Length: 300
Length: 233
Picture 1 (tube, rainbow over the protein chains, first blue to last red):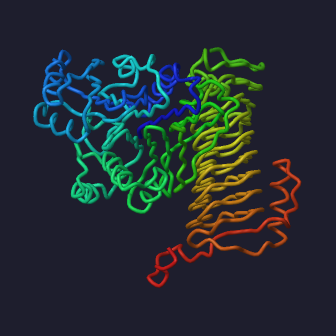
Picture 2 (picture 1 turned 90 degrees about the vertical axis):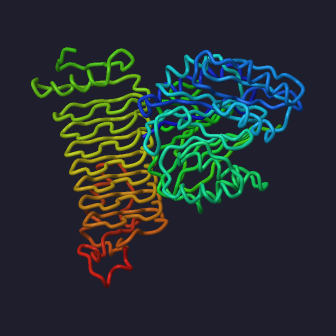
Picture 3 (picture 1 turned 180 degrees about the vertical axis):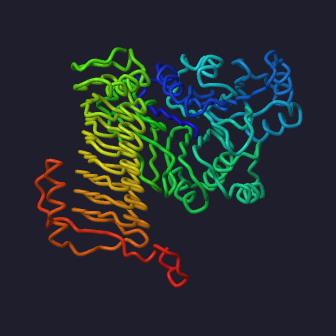
């Protein structure tokens, strides 16, 4: 099954309330996916010349200062970081590839959840309520957010197998469905240099988009290609630093509904998750058509 | 919750769907099951399911999956949009959606009448087995997929692969069918079909002329597999 939700604000007015509204949407989808839950928040950007790197370690009292020390040694400036439960968000003044390389060798037990200017991905095993409480999601501020409640089918119930998946800069993807040709696609994408952390089918979809975006394609263009190359069932919701998109496969048996007002675009697996939003009674509501790319973006 | 024969109001922010449905199921033990109003459904699933008496239930607001499923004899009016599988497996009675319906509306229905004022999503009338469905707007792709009996009336347009692998149901479309599924063909509209359609339109309170519709049904090439027909699937 699985539940997915996304909330994209068109104007800054509701940004202070993003976490509040988005938490309520995510919690409602617990009945579709009680195994694990996660979200990507697009919040305040890192300062110019820096990146936000969100890391995870399963130990509750993990010593994140050791990670800051090694990043500081390598890049001459000790990064600032804030710890959020099992995750920590570092602001690092270095290039993405270098950061990934250093962390891979110096701290192989640490998982990189996301890298970008705005994105922070946090996910854990457990119900959405427990994940919302663990990460203080209700108070989070930002321009858009994408979340997932997982009922596992294709791979184990672990933090790493939870959604959203990010394989690229400021990119995240959540998926309801299953892909049947992910194994071959993963092999092909690995040859292009895309790095995968799991055997999960949805991570391959994220890697596929990363590959196309790196070649300079737009988000909408990359998703149009996905219709040709991805075999299986899917409703995807995708986030980039300024963009938000929804795509369903040609059969469209995985549910999706979109609500749009002057202030926001919201999508969810079920209307129940949208019923909690302000102004929903006046929103334009529709079910996305099969094999049709819907995308929105905010001017930089 | 005590069952009575009077007019009842149930607020789903105070009462669970399970309690509501249980109370509605107890109506078989009373005379004159009455008129029920359900408030604040907020997209809840399975509202007014499994009813089996001549009760009238009106639901004010958007509902979720499988509402009015397995209906028998009851009249259920949904004032708002509704989710997947509204009136699925209906046996008899009347379900009226005064909004849009999501996918698989009227799935597997054996009887009764389902009227949708707005549009219906994909696979409307999938595997229908005798239900009558009247959609005032359009229907999505693969509607009447594997339909076996009954009538699907679409006043707007139909999405791709209409009537794919259809058996004996009749499909009437007033607008355009994007394309027809495997073994579904346009058929002649004879007097008996015009009469049938006029009756269905009247029961749905519509005054379209039957002559504005086209009829689609099964070419009956796929009932039994024959090697020579492999190309038709």
